[in-house]
Length: 50
Image (cartoon, rainbow, N blue to C red; front, side):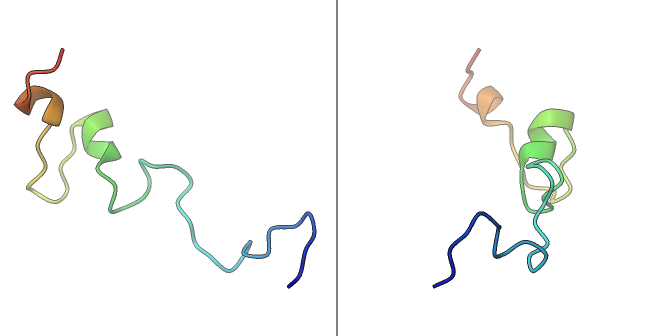
């Protein structure tokens, strides 16, 4: 096992910069109202949460 202060996975993974830029995240729907999948529902409205 290699230990150190460096991130061993850095450069190997293509991670999203944030939750909105991750393609499969529903965060963009809640942030911008964009439903790229066509089946998302705003649960705050479904369950009448203020």
